Length: 184
Image (tube, rainbow, N blue to C red; front, top):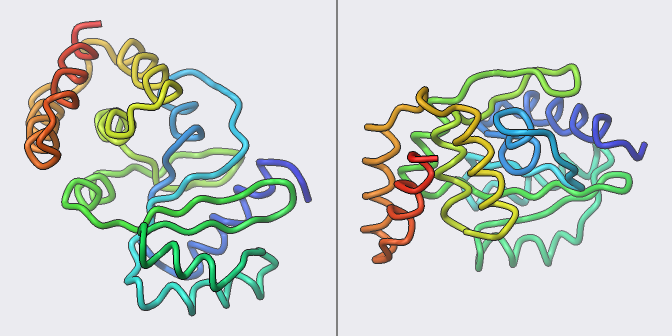
């Protein structure tokens, strides 16, 4: 098993069985809302208490996922993230921790990727999620999404969250980047 579609179907099946709220983000979500691009992983925002990650990982191991449990539990404690592998790919998990991430999950829509339905963020929420880290690939993704949805984005929603996220980070870059994207 070494294709991204197979890995995606397996992780979605596992997450659906665990009945934990989650959101597909990253390159796969960008390919749905923007333009298709290559990605070598699956990125998931997961609503789980840090204390429950150990049990989650043990269940995942029984389903064939691989990882170093001690290392991933340290990552959960220090960074709020963990990773699992399957075949030639890996799945990156970000543990939901902010009001914005909670809002994004509550606003998600179930869309079909690789033949299975999974929750994806709205275009507005995906733009905000990708503006925060500001990596070159994220900048390109946000520009593609903003162009594709030009004139159809909920400006009020995205501007309010951009201001709030900038205030929380004490960095106006997020708000400035959003305003630039809204004018593409």
